[in-house]
Length: 314
Image (cartoon, rainbow, N blue to C red):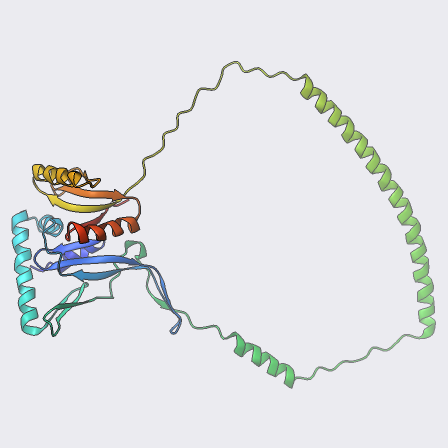
């Protein structure tokens, strides 16, 4: 049974997909990129990495396989084990193995697995439909030089205008002087008219303002019924990032793990039974991805190297 397609499906929704007995595929967000040398733009994406030390069965892949193939959970676990055995034998014999849409594994000189992720699939759902594109550089300087060259080669000829006779200028000066005197007299009459209009406008505005002030002073305000008090409910802070200590099929085991974490001083909590019939136990929940990631790294160093991050769908 080929389980690559089921791993690929889960990578769209989860940050960590563990293959029991083999290792875990981890995803990390990468923002949009610009390659200035090739003028290429790349959309945001999920970077895939591999951790060979996370081999414990968290139930995620087995439950997904059981639902997709309509088989029992134990049958799905056995199918995963068989597929992992095939992978390891192929790596031992051929030195490499390729998982479709996930990446390629090779064996180095120290007999360690080396993972190279596939780049043809973007597992970030928000970037669906976006693809890299290249935009050619705008050559503004070249166009500027071409214009300067054309201006240098094309001479511009100026044709002087013929001057009017002295006699024509004399009559034109007399006509202009007459217009100037008429304009000065007209401007004085117009200015006096505007001044009178402004004074009348000010008087009207003053009378209106006096009447408004009088009405305000005479007004009386009554409050018959006081406004009812308003109760504000502050919504709880959304904490969709969970550091998972373990996922248990038996609820009593989940309660024991939860009690043990409380005794160790963690702000532990339990999640309700999920759709796979499992009971998750958390070290804690956080509102930001950065805080949850940092806490998970500390827990891996100090308490549990198999702790992993669960991101709740918003």
